[in-house]
Image (cartoon, rainbow over all chains, first blue to last red; front, side):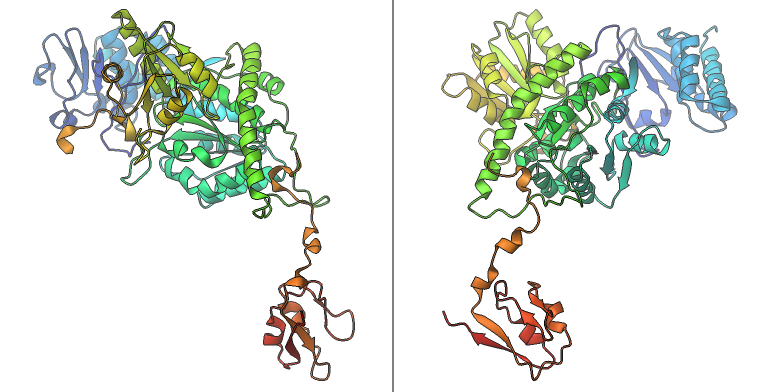
Length: 142
Length: 386
Length: 85
């Protein structure tokens, strides 16, 4: 529904039991920043607490970001991975690979399977490869 | 089969299984993905429907009226300004007793322009003669489509239906949902058997001219059909439960209402947040419960009175505003009427308009206000702006 | 119920409504002036002028006396005369 290019926020909750809460997420366990240029305009780190993980798409290192105490910062150049693998600066699947590696919430084979369902043919292969490159860049072992 | 699916896509899957013969809609910006997906189904030959493209919402519902009068099962979907542009046709559809089912992704009305959620659109058409169900989650949303066609087409009812669901909050959220198989839906929802239809070999006209000698009686019959719809919705909900294991045998759902001193009353997806808030308040020793309304038209007056018997105060959460009404919200008036002369205090709280987020702490704050006797007000205004 | 559902009706009900009783002025044809052009048949909003005979014939059971035929007749062959009531 959003205009392409406009800043947007999206939220995910996952649980083994039924999720009833419909409000936005104010104290995230994890955040993914798809465009680090937003950081100067929006307090993207608000609500993060000790043990939270921030995954940031940037060329910079983790120490370039001023986050609340105890927050782990993972940085990767997902745009470069996306450009190299997909030929387009669409970072969603790369960042999902990074998320899987950084948090351990998703196993890589499950991610690859989901991408295989979402995309078909060569596009599926490329997106799985982008996810794999990002997964490895963040230290995950497939 | 249980799948994780976007709310709009789940509706499209449900509608496909209802086998509508005609679909007509006009894609308001932002449309949900419902009719977009239905158009794909038709184009791919997965659905045997005529998909009519038109020039406006007014035309879309007009096409639906014609198709329904000609004896087809008919479906449409819209939101916000789109529904309001349909308003005139809505009254004609119910007056002609055409059982059209339309999904309403509830969104705010302009001006000012807003694309975000509240329930002003369908509440504004309260008196249009369509029965209105409100879904808490995507599963209810899917199930209400089967139920609505069954009730709408009942020859004892013959009313059109809104299946209302909160825009974005349900329409664009992915969550687990069970989409019944076609055979199961066919067993629950028989083919459309029109009460009467336009037929060139046996002509009739519908919605004819009624002079002052007749008009009131037609409106009386419409109101009586709406009264009968209460029973029909419950029966269809009960039958649904027997077949699918998810029962909607009441127009209300009580959540932790046993011994509750303060009751919250709400419609739609906010009920999920309220349930979590109620759990937290119960854990803190507060006697709070939720009464969820599945139906706003017909209004389940008896169920509301029964469920709220014994509470001290009632806080009605309103995603609508009726400017100039003493209570502010349209739902509170009905609840207050249901509790007339009981001595129970009923307060309305206008909340979450135009997409403003509603959190558990907001629900707790509303309970505090009700227990202090303050209500019939906007909740959560930004004082610095006014 | 006594009313038809959805205010539906069979065709032909307008025949029961004898609108001729509304008339104050009645159209009267002067056969000598009439050129039999048929314009009055097309113009009549009630559709109650026919040419079953040689000349246009008005069905006074339904003619409301609106006067359009007289107004439009190119030969000025139709006069509107007050009804005696």
